[in-house]
Amino acid sequence: MKAIILAGGEGTRLRPLTYTTPKPLIDVQDKTLTEHVFDILKNYGVTEAILSVSYMADKIKNYFEDGFKFGMKLSYLIEERPMGTAGPLILLKKMGCLLNEDFMVVNGDNLFSLDLAKFFDQHKKNQAVATIALTVVSDVTNFGIARLENGRILEFIEKPSKDKAPGNLANSGYYVFSPEIFEFLPEKNFVMLEKDIFPVLAKENKLFGYPDNSQWFDTGTPQRYEQVKKEWRGIYKSYEK
Image 1 (cartoon, rainbow, N blue to C red):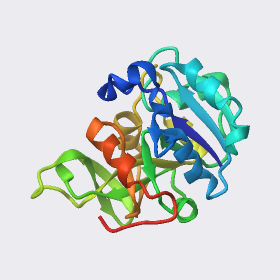
Image 2: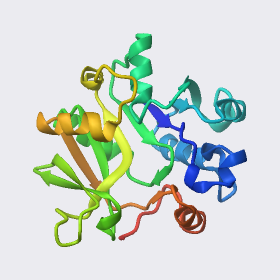
Image 3: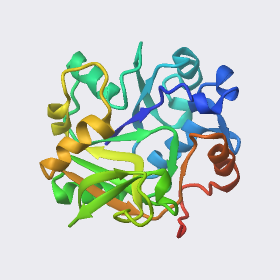
Image 4: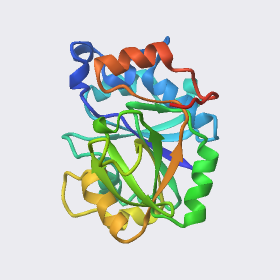
């Protein structure tokens, strides 16, 4: 299975650090953030990935090169302008390079020590077009919370109050897609998976959730970045949140 790693954001909330260092190269426990993502993938045999880059693209490419010294086989998609979280899919479709087997898409900002083998198996078992790994969160008011029925995601409720939340499972930024996903791309140049594709899949009962309570971190803010540097325990341990 191949993976697409979303690594094109400017990391504006981590400025001034990201004025000089692209977010994929920020340090987490003496490794770049992206190397930790590689470790998660490699632990389950995913060694071929496409890095989707934009901001400081050359700096990222010069650091990782072809991925050999990191135990990966890397290629790159370059977004000349922001195209949304579905940007890599749009570019692949325009290039005629549609993937012909199930593949992962990973938000490169997030670290998640979930069992990818079980994640993949659940996707195949459900014959899903898309499966979202869902992480348990303690404060639902900061996230989009999934409403589930028999494993299917019906919708996400954005930052609900605690009394109106349908649960405590949030989008982790780790996905498995079947090749059919390309049929759901709208004909425009800026597409968000979360707003433009997932709601359509949910209405057609083709969107599934995979809950997992393993360690998960979003590095999107200075506070969360400091937390991951101190608390990330790697790919082998999970904990109850």
